[in-house]
Length: 385
Image (cartoon, rainbow, N blue to C red; front, side, top):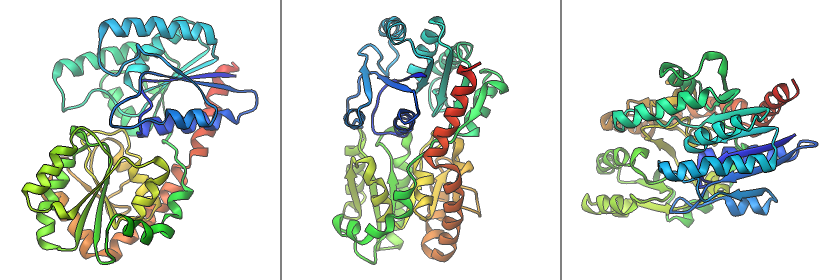
């Protein structure tokens, strides 16, 4: 079986790690050849292309497959992908991310690939952009859905939202949770003290961590607004920002202007192999994104047995179950976010109980071997028919 994965860019991100682990797992299948095709990967989000090449993954970089909507470049990308597919002759084309998913599915379908599938890591339409953009994305997603054999979703919420928008039909969709290497998170506390010292946290500090790119819809502004109140009550509270992006200067300025710059640690980009360490250094994890298929940091935090509060968006409630595994808050609700964080600070025993229950749940759902096995079954069922 020859498998071609297509993705818009291989930055440090959840969709990219999912794709990478899928590739690594499939390279171990007997008789399988796996190739990854990506668009240009550059910018403050980092890249995992060198890591792929270190593991002897065949990587093709296609310059015309850019993230931004660009009709001329997109036409070039369509014909470029058709050319690559014709040359490679894959049995399976598996696309990831919106742009690659639309162009890649149509190109593969028109080249009569035996099995064309797409993973929805997060839908491109959402309430925080213009009506026209949402209409355009829904239109092209409907079109692309008619040019694939199956759509994989990383959360049931993605299926529900796609169907509500008139994309595809229920039989087209399958949920496969985005797998990850769980062992490093289960064993991460062994490095807790070392990492806290590295970043300047004392034993008595209460560390609130957010792991995400510093971009608008990742919701940092709401966490910073909540922390501005919390730090006045709890002098030992610290905010640990892991990730980088174009909004970093803005939040550094906000912290200075509100008098708590000394309470915020910006870790910048952290290698994916080190994410378990920064979570281990934490006392809790806060995730305030306004849109996310299913943020990987939620199961990662629970696998590390750390209390979690998250905005109630997309697939979050499939992991953060109120009163069972963590705390959900309405999107943009700074008051609710404050209340949930204070609940964790003041009731650590109860918060830990929820996190431990969540740890068991995530061990069952998010092991990357399970994801790879489910993909294998799906591919074999379709390709061998």
